[in-house]
Amino acid sequence: MTQRALHELRSTKVSAEFGIGKGYAPAHHGELLQGMFRDASGGLRRALVTLPQTTRGTRAVFRPSQNHWGVVGSPGLTKVRRAAVLALREFAGRPGAAKGGHIEIVSDVPVGIGMGSSTSDVTAAIRAVADYHGVTLSREELGRLAVLAECASDPVMIDDRVVLFAHRDGVVLETLGHRLPPLLVVGCDTRPGDSVDTDRFPPAEYGDREIGFFGVLLAALRRALATEDVALLGRVATASARINQRFLPKDNLEALLELCLAHGGAGIQIAHSGTVAGLIFDARSPDAPDAAVRCSARIEAMGLVLTTVIGAPPGGTAEERTAC
Picture 1: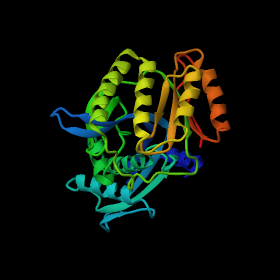
Picture 2 (picture 1 turned 45 degrees about the vertical axis):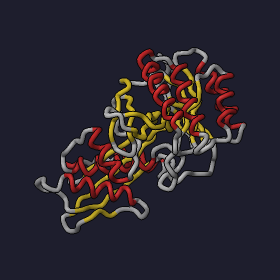
Picture 3 (picture 1 turned 90 degrees about the vertical axis):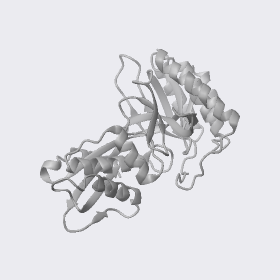
């Protein structure tokens, strides 16, 4: 969908008061850390920490029906329809609950490059059905339903804090902090025109040493958030990205990292099941804006496509520029 279409839908004044439900969910720009981690019981779970991107997202409108069961929508939106059906079941006992309905999705999140398009769609759809029924689901409940709908979800619905999220279980394993330190991230697509089918992408098979190292990285990320240490956060993200080279390599990873470090950056983050990467800078550094501009030019000269610039220096204009 186009930016214009998304804007028009965002501007549409629809609500449950008029028999329609609406929902919205943001995107992300890959992960800062992904791997396997011990939960409270000592068991191993696949989990991740995402980098939010709030200027892209999906808006959903749910139009209820009392005449037919099930949910209809555009062809190809299988997960969205499944999510809406699961949400309808949650509210089936409420007075005036819909039997079925129609779900409409408008999104400006690129598909197949690791920016959470699927989870953004699914989460927006669940919120739209909940809105029609006058219910505000908790972020954790949204995460549980999203995973039921698509088997694995990103934590775009957990937007009030930074979490380690078990993306195949729909469970928050740990809250790492209330927010990330001030970041300026120059994002790009490392394989323009290519995409990753996450439904067919096999889960990474980590070795014992890698699993042990993830625990070290998680401890470092906790410290980075507690002390607002962007340099340490960048090293954690870079280490996670390098481990993932064994499963979904990015040919330009080391070149992008070298570019970032040469301009005073902290490291590189990636989509572990996608094609995007981001050069991380400390937004509090007075040199960061110019460095971001120079790196953006070099990235385009490498034949890559810019996806976004996230963040702004303190006191500067609140800006999050999107490309693609």
